[in-house]
Length: 298
Image 1 (cartoon, rainbow, N blue to C red):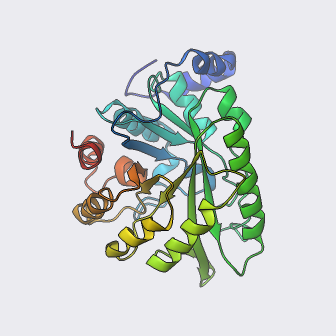
Image 2: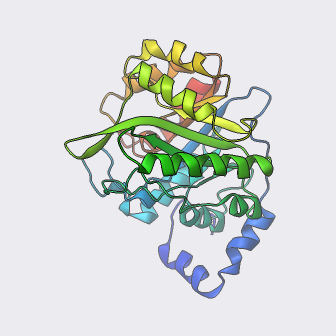
């Protein structure tokens, strides 16, 4: 079944007749260390759909076609220098059945309950992978989203749940990538504050969560003013990966922001989704290869 042409019919047939095939594929999957001797990571992210976030650029339903998304992921994961993938259970299990996760870093997305646009968006329950699922499936770590609005009580519930998830991951010696934001509502829509001071505060809050930070990584945006990233990253000694953010028409401008931020002492790589899977020019391989070159100089 390992092919760049994905058949939803075949996947559904396996899931119908042999659901145990997912656990079997996970059990035999060849694994690798999280990082190599250069400590650089390129991870492709695809956990947006489970929050109902299907838009890319001006296309509100770009990620709604599962076969097309899987095909893009298979292409991305096949490129030299790509270390792995971050996704929800349904997508990771499809990729397991497609044989696309051999010798890759696999990160399970943990909290997807804060549905995009919902009144309860900031009460971001852990409705995805649990630490025990990540351990059972022999995945390599987890990722959680932590958006904090000082005026919304849902943020406190998410903050508490995040701390306990960090504890549970650390007890299993599993890395957890925490993606923190200070956020607020503008005309009813939740907006992340990417100013330097706001990102620095989110870093300070996230770094102190849980009984240990030994297995905690930070997944951070490039600040609105890229010049702020240097001092923002001095807020914590935790390793950092950069997230990609929204797809824009200025792909070269995005690459330049990544290039500059990747040179900072605590930054260890990129975890990028739509910018690589749905680049403005449509060339997935070229976008992925550029990200690898920026991160690893390959």
